[in-house]
Amino acid sequence: MAITGLYGKAIYEVPLDPKKTYVFTPNHFSYFDIVSVNTQMPFFFSFMAKKELANIPLFRIFFKTIDMPVDRNSMEGAKKAYYLANKKLKEGISLLNFPEGGIGAQVPKMRKFKLGPFKMAIEYGIEIVPITLPDNWKRLPSGGSLPPGTPGKMRMYVHRPIPTENLKSGDEVALAEQVYRIIEEKFKEMNGL
Picture 1: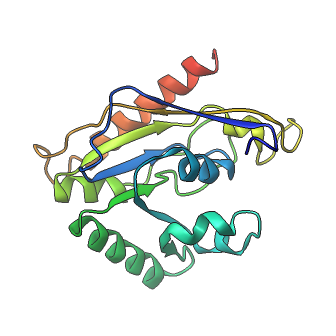
Picture 2: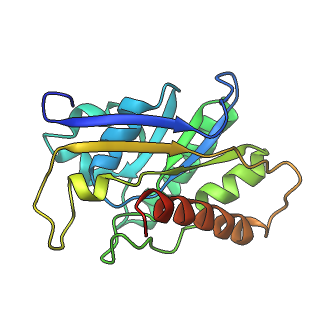
Picture 3: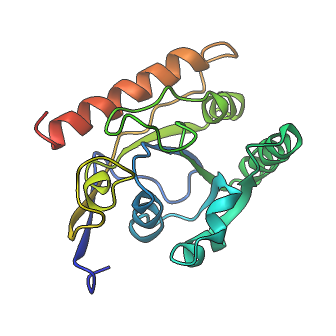
């Protein structure tokens, strides 16, 4: 990353317990988000992403951690990914999932969150950790008027974990909305918006 002029910096609101299992939920505006979380997170986690990304040569190295490739064109493929994610959480392995389900057309506005990671966190009583990635959309935009690929900072703000042990089925909508607000507010703050 340094050779290409990309400088990662992870900022933690509070220290995370390396012995705990978490569900990490970053915003997703750029393919560099994958690079950020894989190079800046000192925790082992299983990664859930669309299976087509493993075919991109530049990113293939980072997809060795994708234990749950999601075939978004197949209901059976989505069910299989959900089953594998549940299996990992049962084994005490943290999960990282982009709840937007992909990069939207309105970057830097987040897409509505899918509820899967929030349902799983509630089901297993696992803390959700929102992650704000405020810079990657500038480094490698997915459209728009910015030049394609620019050097610079790639900050990652890891928020305080949100407990879920007192939540029940049906609370995932409110939890997803809470995480959305946390990420959106920090994104705006870090970008001076």
